[in-house]
Length: 62
Image 1 (cartoon, rainbow, N blue to C red):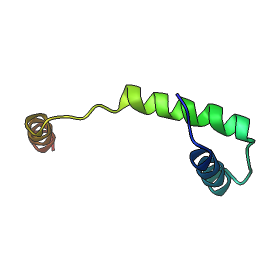
Image 2: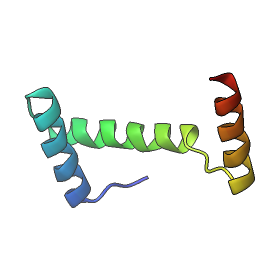
Image 3: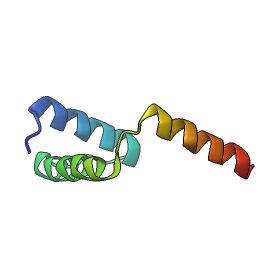
Image 4: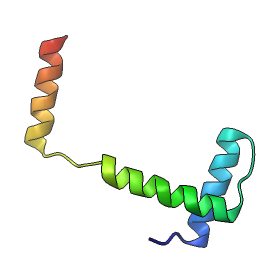
């Protein structure tokens, strides 16, 4: 997996804004790749049918 220089620079800027300190390009690359891998593992799109079923379960639980 590769991140572009622009993506790395964006990550550095966002990290500095959120945490108040700047990370190196090497650390930003490592953390950025880890974040993308995590999102690929966690994020799974659902169908409209699955969405409606989840909504109906939520409504019935309230």
